[in-house]
Image (cartoon, rainbow, N blue to C red; front, top):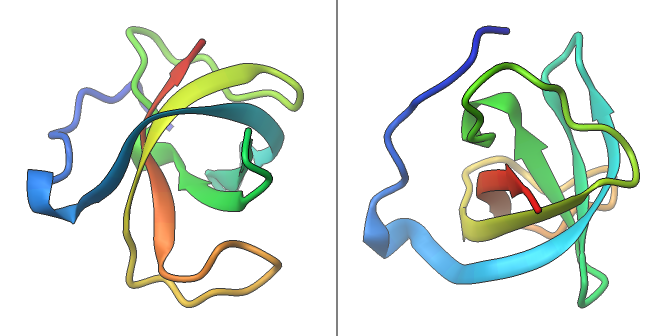
Length: 91
């Protein structure tokens, strides 16, 4: 997947800002994974929402900062329903 400088989500779609957490897993081939917020929620993350100056994959155990936004993605695999991590940056 290429480095990304994508537009940030519309302000009205962002539910929470400035959260921190740890990457639980990230599948580089599929481009998605899971972030565990410090409050214990497991939140889906997609490569399109990872902010980076150069492509560096998320790796389990690293700390990240992120926002939470509405998502049309159905809940499943234990992820918090109706939300996804956006604006994800390494901490």
